[in-house]
Image 1 (cartoon, helix red, strand yellow):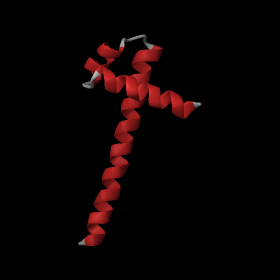
Image 2 (cartoon, one colour):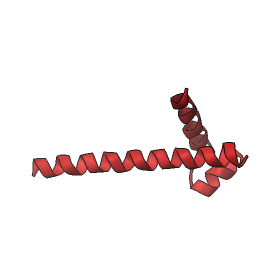
Image 3 (cartoon, helix red, strand yellow):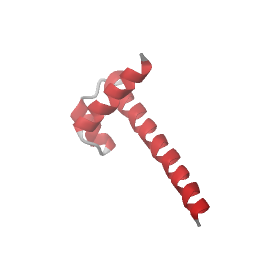
Image 4 (cartoon, one colour):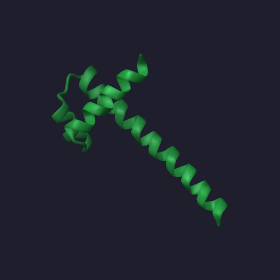
Length: 64
């Protein structure tokens, strides 16, 4: 039982990281490549504008 729980946790963490990466990539594309505002990008992605700002700021830090 413990082994299967560990396996599920690892799978969950991988999926969560993939979702975060994809959200950040989409937020960056909308705001930087297409010039969409933070609020509009948030509406399109189903996120708050603050979260879009965090995702684009975090992504900018990772690229430096």
